[in-house]
Length: 162
Length: 217
Image (tube, rainbow over all chains, first blue to last red; front, top):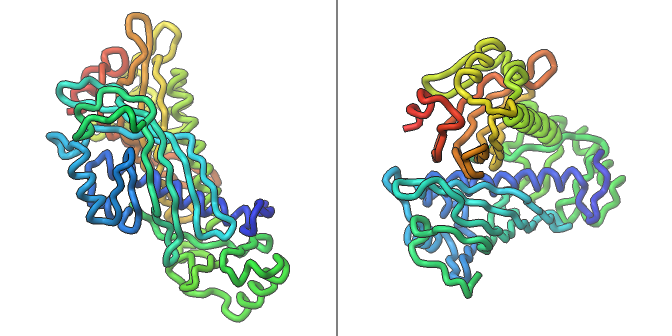
């Protein structure tokens, strides 16, 4: 049942940590699609956040980054729907750091834009255990497939950065 | 949205090595250490799953849900959530209704209860096409679980629905959230409530009835 994993932490430790990290990943997108940028900035208060090479670090920069970079529409939300999948988590053998790679597939719908997929890509994340809680240490967004982003990002995506 | 960190079950085989001090030890010596610590203090009153040194505690939470309980419960609930969409996309409304035998099901303003009520609701609200299915594909993601006790849990999740049928090219038609409550009834985890929160809407003429579409606004 709780056989030893590859590293010094037990298999059960690893499952618990992965569970915590899955929750952080899901919480982020719930907040994002609800337009709760301050809450995301709180999650990223000690993290650096890299979107196609532009990096924001800490709560204030991340908040400004989201406010400046992500459009919110009449209902106060980005009108997006980020579905995460294919989450790969690696827990450091010491049990206080972890990394993950996951897929996001984003749909959007608002007046003037029928429901459609607008972007797909990966989140590359690292996490750290601090004061008994797991938190983001870094998040890098790598876009792969690009649709109509006119109503999502504030500035056009530079294809050379993909 | 954040739940408290959960604690560890004091399983004899649960070898927690997360503290640097523990990494030096063999699993056996660690377990002896844990056992003696447990004897000295049978039920440490701690709020979170980690001590100040960052060591995972091998005790239960106040609500009696250990870390391993929580993982097992979440796994069972995840299975219910996945089973529901498999049945739905196969048009097996009676099977869904049986899953909802103890549940309130629907969305604000349109709910049904019990096997007959839920099956009638689905038949009235969801179109089935030539192959007997809705020709939909519900992908569930971003599940946030909250295990409240050994007998009760909630979950909020995303659905993203695509559809394709004759005259209707494959496309997304709907997204939203499921808000669920589960309880362990006679030894089995069951839905006791599933309410939909529609968010983004595409072309629903081949999926739901007009009354439900109107409720999306």
